[in-house]
Image (cartoon, rainbow over all chains, first blue to last red; front, side, top):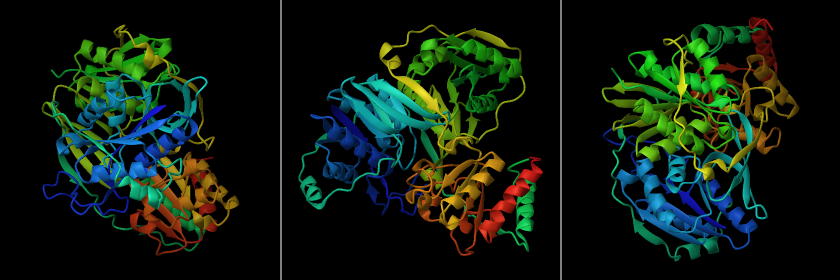
Length: 258
Length: 328
């Protein structure tokens, strides 16, 4: 099976977020970008399928500026990806999910792709648009929020589950299709040192993203929440009193239930 | 005279899901006359759903009775949605923020090369453009986008808006375009839907109230205190990573960086100290209550209401008080 996995560099989870001077976006200065979260689960899923279906290949694709984009591709190679393609693109493409999907579609269309994997959304802006848009542009169905993906070689079908608002859904889908993975359900592996060293010299194909033709969504503001004032602490002399006071506050002050 | 706004409905049998009613409410707020909202329903029992919907909301519903769309991926709805928007002259499309709605939003945006946003918590008209706000970075920040251009598609965050109520003009049910749905998009099928792991209560990400338990409960048996409190509130049950790692409850209940992100109206943290790992998964909840014996626990920094005390006494008292006020 030819597996394409799309990854995107995102700020490390512990990053302290700061707002850019113009107030419209995250200030990327000093932020460490890594392969993480949803995309880590997508890479893990690609490797699990490669291990279970003989003759499979994993092709990692990432879009973005140097050096972070190349670094996440090397991380994917160190984990076990067989090939990598870097789509060099600036913020006008990277910040526009549909333009990102167009550039990815262009790169993937010409390469073998039985299965396209990505995170159900990116770990930073969480737009959740690139996967479905890429599916539409490739003319294949897409499924977000997927866990427990398996391939039945005899039937040539995928089976997977996804928790949605309706409940735990069980699906069957023929190839080709696009799967957006839920985060961290599959306990992603970590790369071993020799593989990390080898990945530094691995070849990475480079292409340049086509210019953007669509209007971009004007990012007007990027805001951090005002720090919460801290909890209003409930004073009480018995558990019953604590319960009564809390319920009264929730009904009359916070108005969260009738 | 503003162009109509199209709402893409989601069906569960012969009823629309609650998220669709929220989307209709948002669409109405974007037009001068609520009668300018058109709802598309497509599926095997779309007409029955349309009749049920218009019976209490009025307004215009476009219907495509199409049994092959029951249990089909969101991708298969995109051609019908696109043709309906063309037919009614809609520039803006609003969808409920379910998994189905989010998938459909990206499909349509790519089809039209249009601007789009998922999970918006505010949507307002700004002249010819749609201005939306949405949480990013797991609720640690918020972005505001101006969606100009010919067309825009948005899905709304579950529970962020009230459901539509009250009729918008007389009921009209008309046909949606009989556009062809490409066979490859119908080849994938949903085989079954089981209620989520918690069994009785609502799903974790969909619930308006979540009660979560942590290490402070000490044993897996004691976790029942959390489940009983949740039951008294009709809430979903969540857990900290300590609880799911220890195998007290399944990983599907984990709230946090490596689990689910939730943003209910009310989040009650029981015996959870509040590691950053957990906080990023729940900090965007509207109201947060923390119950913990350690007054210095970081959870109190993000909570709105705090009780420092013995959870083994306070939680049963709270469950009893809620049952009392709810008359159950």
